[in-house]
Image (cartoon, rainbow, N blue to C red; front, side, top):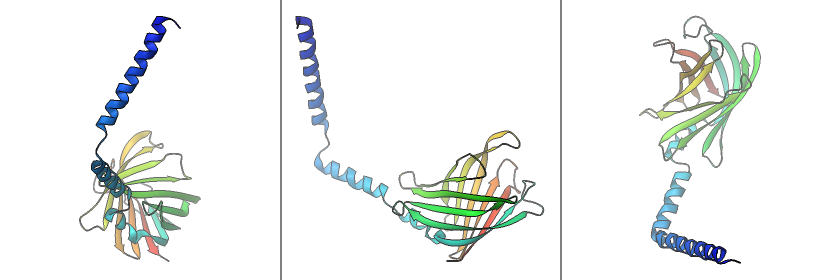
Length: 203
């Protein structure tokens, strides 16, 4: 081994040991580590925000109204379906499994709604067999804790529009009934509602 190679190896070992020593010295004290672990566990656990979704757990009949004109006016197309909501991942996410039909074709889909303890907001996603797009959304409950409003984006292949602003509203009427709405905000108020699903508890 020549002198240059030996010098490079020794230099690397010295720098590595110095870096390791510096990281060791920067390690938080045990009390701070305990506080960090406690905070992490709090953020990772189901909270009061999750409990606000409990009224949705169960099995439901679903009646869907869809306004084909896309402006919430006129006579809607009406179809029947069913849904089941259940907690998954230890009560961290509420899963909906939906079966029904759309424009005479069988429709199945599922989605998840959760509460982000750190960001203090509700998040959701949805997918179904009527398309290949994954819908995502986020928002909050109102002060009553009975109206959850989420916002997201939607691509409209029929018109060629991309990233349209969409509002999703869940109104908890009581423990045996809730109503879900989809609003196309590009239409303009007041007739933005394009879909309304009324859920009636069966179990």
